[in-house]
Image (cartoon, rainbow, N blue to C red; front, side):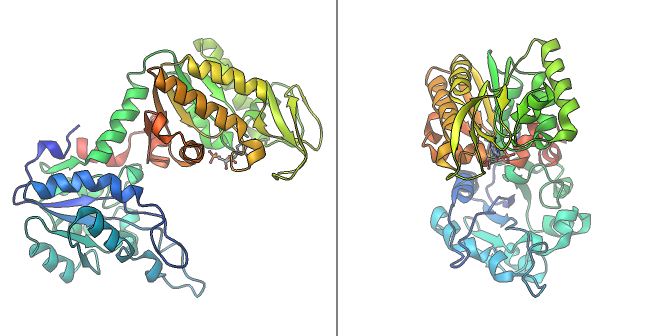
Length: 404
Ligand code: AMP
C-alpha cells in the first residue's frame, strides 16, 4: 500500500481526510470517546515532523439529515469546532480553524499555512455535495493542498467527495495514512492469508444484515459459528420450534441454501445446541437454559446456552485465525451476556496461544471492551460498516481511489 511513508512532506501541504466523527455528550458537547482522533495522530505527526503542514477535513454526524425540531440545521452540535481543543491537545500544536470547508476564508488560511502548522476545516457534511460525491465540490477542496492523504477507514466504503472523488485531482500525490494502512493490512491478513484453521464467529440480530458476509465467508473459512438472534432463523429453517425468538421468515430458504453450501464446501457451520430463553425481552424476565430442539411458545432465546458456549469456545481455542462480527446474545443485559463473554475469553486465549484475532467494529468491539479483553485480541477494527463491506468482498471506493 502507498502510505505516507512513501512521500516526503517537507514544504508540502497535506490535505488529510480524517475521521473525527466522534461521539459527543448531548448536553455539554464534550467528546466522550476520542479514540478516532488519537488513532490518526501518528499520521499527522509524520507529516509535521518532516516539515509539512496539515489541512484536516472530516465529517461529524449527519447535519443535513438530523435537523433540529424546527427543521433547521443544528450547527452547534455538528461544528468540528467541538473537536478543536482535543486535536490541539493531542497534537501539541495550536490548530487553526476555518469556519467553512471551501470558499475564500479556507483558501486564504490554507495558503498562509506554514510548515508545522495545522488547519482544521469545518464539517464537510454541511454541504450536500459531500455525500453526493460532487466533482466540483471535490475539486474546490483539492485546491487547498498539494498532497491528498486518506486516513479515514470508517468512511472508506463511501464514494463521497472527500473520501474518493477528490483523489483524481492528485494523480501522483495521493496516499494512505497509517490508520487506513493498518486496517487494510489486518483485514487482508484474515481474508487473504489466514492461517488454518480459520474460524468466523458471527452473531447479532438479523440474518438479512449479514447475508453477504456469510456467503463470502463460506468460501474462506473452516468453521462458521452462527450465534445471536440470527441463529434462530437457521434453526427454524431446519424445522426446530423456536418459540418467540427472533426470526426472519422470508429468509428461511436462504438459510437452508447457506447450510447446503457450507456442506458442499466442507465448511463446518455451527449453530447453537441450546439457548438461555426468557419469557420477555428484559433482564428482569424469567429465564432458563433450554435445548434448541424445543423452545416453548412464549419463550425467546436471548443468548446461546451453556452447551453451545462450551462447544463454540473449544472450536475458537483450536483456531489459528479468528474473525468476530456480532454478539452471541443480548450481551447488554447481564442475564444474557454469558455466551458473548465465553466467546471473548476463548478468543483471548487463542490469541495468547498464537492465533490472529480480528474483532469487527460495532457491537463486537463494544462487547470485547465491556468484558475487558480489548488488549488481549490481535486487533479491534475501527471500521464498522467499512470492514463489513470489505468482508462482503466489495471494493471500497476510498481504497480504490488511492490505488487507481
Ligand atoms: P447487529 O447490529 O446485527 O450485530 O446486532 C447486535 C444486537 O443484536 C445487539 O444489540 C444484541 O443485543 C442483539 N442480539 C443478539 N442476540 C440476540 C437475540 N438472541 N435476540 C435478540 N437480539 C439479540
